[in-house]
Length: 489
Image 1: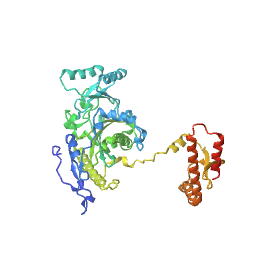
Image 2 (image 1 turned 180 degrees about the horizontal axis):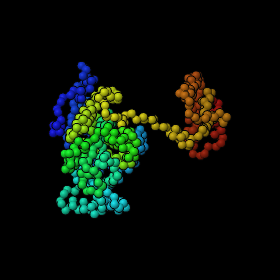
Image 3 (image 1 turned 180 degrees about the vertical axis):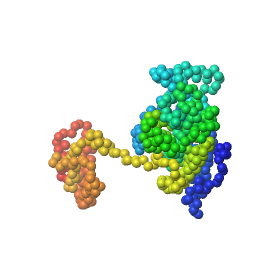
Image 4 (image 1 turned 90 degrees about the horizontal axis):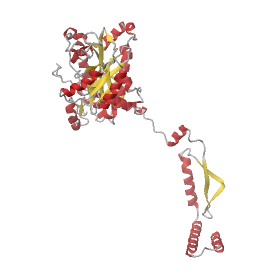
């Protein structure tokens, strides 16, 4: 922060919400602002309820250029319920055509695609670099092969590359190419839930007019690290960054010429960006929301096509916070201040087991786009309900003989005229009535009746024993005698 000419100030309103200033309140939260190398160490040693850390675990699935397309494609195969509350998007609708170049087979697949689209332009990026470093334009198969041949002959360390379809007809502002730098704030709360907020950011323009045939990267890449290398940067410094309001006014003035609706920068473009980011957070929530008390501010780059289609280019875990012109001085400090205020207030409520939303007046430009805790979870249907829905279970009922207890003999008999239909009891009282009646009948039996039933059991046991000891098959006369003796009782 000091290198970027940021003033150092101790603002208690950022790191502690109004609730923490009460006499018996918990100690204020301690903010740990760290880089990626230190994040793992701090996350392991953080104390829940006391520390909040400006890094989320598992963010490589978003910020790594190789893993981002794989994450979106995995989401395409995920069940629909994961994004139940958000528009169902696909990887092809969010990202331009992207190929991961890890293996020789993947490179061969790309060459087949490139040969089928002769004359197309592609942009090749290293997987882990940023600020426009290592980016190459690929116009023909020879350029692609030379890229990897140079890597081997120059003795450079082997890199993982990703190659992306170049948007050849971008929307231009006064003849200059531009993209959008928006901010995504993600907070990991309790129970593997997370919140995501979106800031519209600003537009980044090139210093000179766009020329598709030129190989000068200053005409194709809009970030400040590349534009500062342009000879025209000093004269066009203030024109390289536009606010969203200025962008919207320009589109409204030339909406007929551009073929876009009025307020497209707010109503159309911003809506598409929010939907894409919400889809991304929903796809990666199981990885991002593993450490409560962690948050992260991402810089997201979007490109607008001439037709108005919005494409996601990449996400950066360490967005540039340098102040290079007056527009950035008016926007970026507010982004950081508001992000810290939202994180402090949200985690203060989380640690107190209080509802996080709605937030107080600290939330101004950031907009809530995703809340995993608010997703309605319907109870899982029972087997009978699923069968009824599938039409497999009709209104048929099964029947079986009823067992009637005779008080005199104690032996149960089945009558064909008296059947019980097995069906679901309508109330709990009806289901408990039969056991209660059976218990009542048993208690009403007199002592002689119980003794008589016991004597019958003894005679039956003796009769069976005599039959089993006999070596020959008992005659019908002996069986009749046993039955006759039992009948007396």
